[in-house]
Length: 188
Image (tube, rainbow, N blue to C red; front, side, top):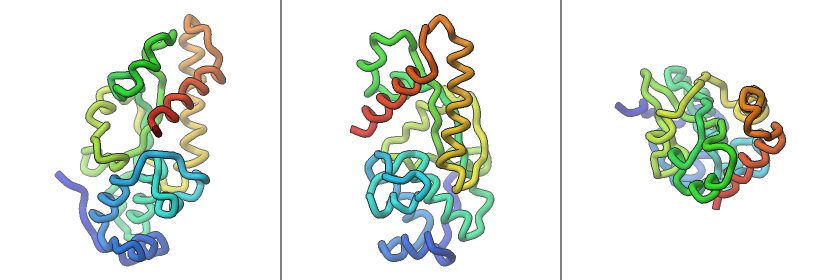
């Protein structure tokens, strides 16, 4: 099963893609998927993915979700999910996790859901096949929620997780910093 394809004809974001020679949703997904992984300079402006030529799961899917919204395809859902990030989901973190008091960290990932199937355009490598078994929570969201709202939900979950795991001997701030290091390592 694939996501529905449609022409990018309505709205500002569609125009931005058209200026890059991208005229269909399928082409937009491929274009975004092939951009490097990395944070944009302002997470509340997903169009920076096109300007800075990089993005995270959030900014890339947030931008694509704007196309979905502009072109009236509500059947394609933007999902923010929490999963347990570990060397099993991201083998490049194996060395980093080696000497930590934890074997995983709750992390958020954004993707699309259509007819019960998940689709990930974060990178050409499909990480979703490794992440799916580690998903613990999924929630539909809107493109404008990708920034502050998603971070708030993530911090809320992580704070509760730290509280449920006092044997780790870590504060929320410490575990958040460990997570930030993971994200930096994934961006390299």
